[in-house]
Image (cartoon, rainbow, N blue to C red; front, side, top):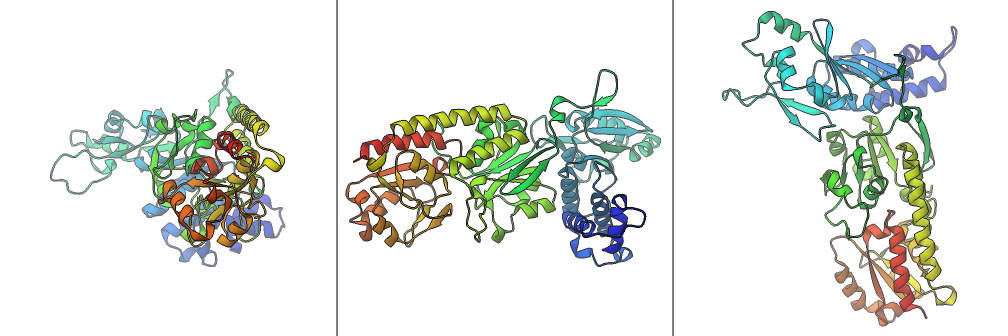
Length: 515
């Protein structure tokens, strides 16, 4: 690694400076980022062409540039590493100017393209607007169809036409010449480059400048104890789970989303003011989120959480996404508190307000975030004013699922704040975790007067109610004897903008049960 450190870190060293621990750390991060950490001890001349390409890109990143100029960065790389490298540089926060011959890669990864032919720029703009069938025929001398992968604001993919019928293998547009075009012009087309880079505005005096939004960046927020810096507002966010997705919708950030992942059941959507977000945003999958889905969506940020998508056992983590150039934001309810994998570092509603403020800053919608927080605080305060107090507060147990051991919530999951602020005494408030299991004997010993069922999963709320009422060890528990069971939707109980309304609803139910 010493040679790479010297070559990549010289701009940050004096004439006689020696390699420092910081230099080594920067190089290790760069190598890991391009998937080349395992090459650190290899001699450069022993590397394959693709390996050399990745190492050279790592060297460039180790220099900590503000602008990255790349000439055919995907040359000699297989398809998987092409996608990973381009996702990496796109998510690096740098202004990137690159030359590419692969039109599909340019269309999928560039914000702005310049098509150069005969030594001059013949077209500039967003990929969808520039890479038209007419331009492909004129400049590249090929016939191709465009396949729109998303909406008009997004890039496009290109494929050859279906005719002639004897073509059994699809070939890239650049290899399918139009036989009617003169050969001399085909040579010029073969030399044409598609350049992509940042969109730089021009001020009235003709000098390069920036918009008001640009001047807002970079921004730094604290997320789960770590400082995270964003060079610009992410444009292709993938969210996982209902509550996380609706935080984005509540902030009006549908246009910054590539899509969302969640099960079929989204709960009752009739009263949420942001329900139209589901119509404007793509539902990517009802299965588990994974790296392949994220890369296929060309995401620049994943908003998920520990056990809300991120999971070491499945190899889907913020560190793994960073390796392929995709940033992450962690749901604050899911932050780990340093006690193994136990989660929770702040009261649940504070977690919601923290995420709203952070995302407001990241996406430059701070006024909208503060307006939401103010309205949510008022809704909670109004509910608390009418909620049972003192000795009238009933003991409440949250039941998610499980027969051998019940899955419930501790002090750092949404139900704690919802139960407490609704006027209940949360019997598991001493558990310094978010969602966790306990023994039935603990439930019986604490004798809840009300049970709140989490309406979630393959087991319906009615099936959960039937189990609780038929489970003999619970027969003498007050909530079972008096049939005081309340049902709330899953999205009401995890961190989400539905939490305040859930407090109001539960407070009304608990008033009926107050002693």
